[in-house]
Amino acid sequence: MAQRPVFVVVQDKPYCVRRDVEFVYNAGFAASQKQKNIVAIHEAYNRRNPEAKVLEISSKSLQPLGVALSAFNLLKYVPSLDGKIPVENVFQGGKVYALGGPFTDLYSATPKEAKRDERHRESGKLISFYYEGDKIPLVPVTAFYDWIYINAILENEDLVEQIIGFDAFTDVEFNPQKSINCQAKAAAVFVSLYRAGKLDGVKKFDDFVKLYTA
Image (tube, rainbow, N blue to C red; front, side, top):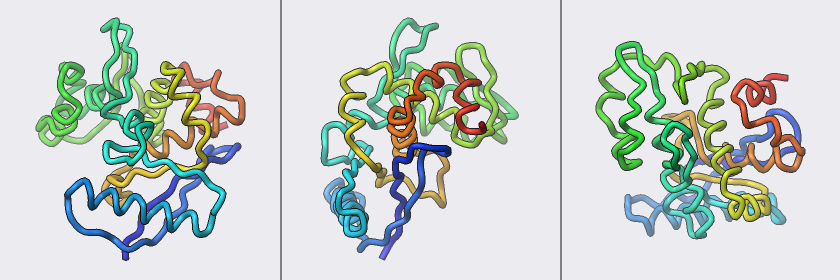
């Protein structure tokens, strides 16, 4: 057995709750094995929540919407570039370490290259983030990632119309024992804020943080 989180939409702070589910794990790195795990996670959650509509967000998703919402595919407009790049590149390129960064050259890399760049391991402790001339703190935890992800969805109306029909989200690649930021969590927060009528407060980072802490 294995355990993975499901991030559930709620209409009040913190705008998402995590529900861990147990399922029979299918070992292996093949996409087919990961997709078996996606099905198993969703079935385990739906046994307790039969009416819930659950979406896997990753490149391994069985639904085109889930693939499109992967941080490797979801595009964010960056004013200084006058163009859109994947959310993953914005996030990785915006990391500032004690010994280096931000590495904005990663904006032009592939998402996989941006994530695996060796400078992430060689530049010391992560101390902040950077975006368009602004220094962004590490706290609240996941706020920077959630902020750029949520705004990227807002920039794609067709995705907004589709994602709001779901009540919970998963990411088969996300292991909370190894990672902090999660696209499934950010998606749940987006839908929660949409249903609460609070998306007007996400454009500026400081205003977005107030939604987390008010």
